Length: 401
Figure 1 (cartoon, helix red, strand yellow):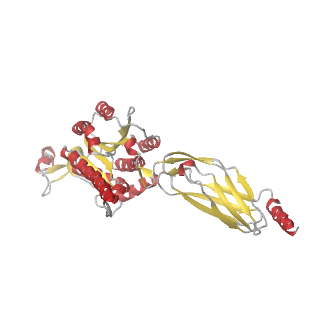
Figure 2 (tube, helix red, strand yellow):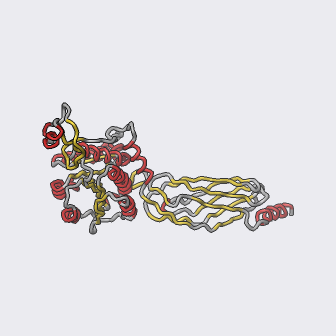
Figure 3 (spheres, one colour):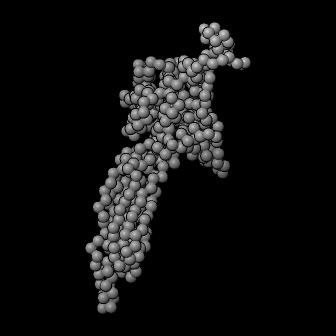
């Protein structure tokens, strides 16, 4: 009888207040792909009891976290803020459902469930934080990364800058004889680097880009890198464009440097979908041949699993190189590279290490094969992708290629 009385008293404490908690979820209007995004929970205990609560949120299915819970202890009438970090693995719309609170008193003989209706949809866009980070590294006054710096190149390009007095060391071929005759002293034409070059990021959406690395696929890494390099291109005064291709018909955003161009490319990257089949390089070549009339820089984000896979498309790559300046960007499989360097203790491990080393060696052969035909290649760790691509763009721009 004493136990039943204590149990009934505990239940009465839990259910004596109709609304025991206030709980609000707050977050940014959109999430950033592959970055840490904070979600804030504001709770208030409306009872006069010291409560032990477990907060369970119906988080989006994309996170694949089926044991999400936050343990909280709250005194009577206390308010508390709780933060949780989410790392989105893909782009798209993420749906947050209701918030559930399971709580009990110090006696702990019973537990009550209290649900709060709080549905919310959040869009996950390519990483804007990564974009800002790469912009800062590129335009900072004293860069710490080799090659990531701002160039001003004086040379014979298409854009005239000014006429200035001749000084020792100036190219005598730049002497402006008409201006010199008017001034009665030697004057030379000075040029600046051309600021109207077209640069296209080409995203391969086929199955070869589905390999995961640190929670993101190669395609997601390529999308973040494409957005970062697009921002740098526009800041440098060049024209940025985007091409997406797979087994279906490729799509294109023509190169431009208008204020709306970055946002248009961001939305297009947000809508990019991975396909199951192999990429159609013939359709890509036909699109570039028909749509790109001016020689451009093409940054092709793809992946080759073997030298055979590269050689199947080598003829198309060589044709693109003749028409434009092509840079092929593909990825290092870091797990296989690390496995190839592990010590072997038996025959099976020796065989496995040999296969891994063969795979790594083929990647190096692919780079050598592409460079043999004058095609620039970047074979990079996925985490260093944006930095390597920006360095290559700045290198080609400074050399006037």
